[in-house]
Image (cartoon, rainbow, N blue to C red; front, side, top):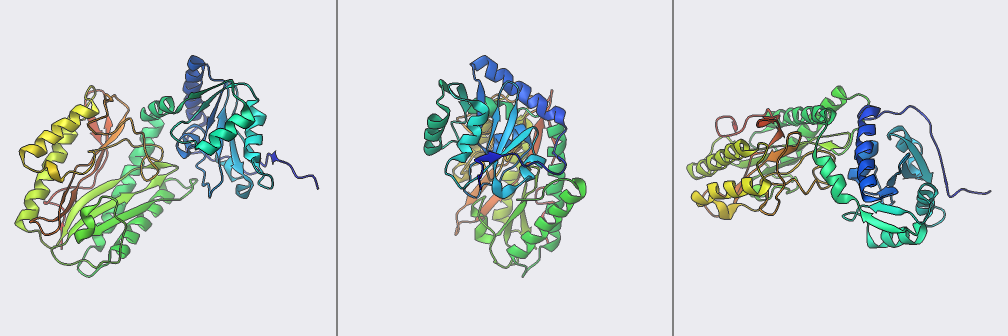
Length: 400
């Protein structure tokens, strides 16, 4: 039997998160960048860009995936183990490579790019070994890092993206309310977290019956477990007076959103209440800063000053917010849009960014624990739109 190095396996109907016109617009902008930089073909390899430009969210299991964009074509490349699913979930063509000969992945890509071309690549994703194979198989005339341009494009959301992100934020709220309903002394973190996750997955299935359902999850932390924002769920049982951190992360067709809230079980002591309220005040102040023309660095410095004036800045451990969009959590994010001292990006209408100040008071000190609020905001022409609905602060989140 003559087994192929690659082939096309197309069956079923295509079902994409957005209309074809959305992907055509994204590719048009990318092709304009290619024209301006002299790139003949982009070899996109990250989950972020393959999903953004084609709609296909791959699951690698150690296998490489890609999308090649030329002046006229867009083709995704997937492994035989996936059969026709990548074609059904991508805009454009799809080629399946076989794995009974090493590097058939690159032979398949070569069939579209040819040799001796100027190749765009993702410098923040492709590994050294894969770059060596790119050089060996494609023999590029020149290579240009296209990652910064694609990240900048992803930072500016279309109306279709904003609609999906709004639905995601509403789904995160659904998870939050399901979690709040389960909070009581003796309940375990894991059981509470599963209630929130299940509620979100059911909500996504109701809103998007043609979607694929994967990777929505909850971090729910109590007591000392709240000291880190991304601490995993445990089987710790809640106790009266515990500080809690509620974190819901629904994913809809590759788009993450999030809700994060500080809560207490039954009661809150005076020291904890003072720190909680200070963080809530910083949260509200920070949200008021997010408007067109404000730089990420300037907003960060202003919130730093707010905390410093209250002798709390030393308890801050990371930035105050980041972008939301394709895989903008857990898998990484558009690093050019973060509220940090070293990011000079100017906020513009159509960007989506969180405000999420966190203070961690060490165990043994008055008010010990991690305090965090998190809202998602769309930058508008004259300010911002807060698309998070779950309430925050002591007036709402002392449960019991």
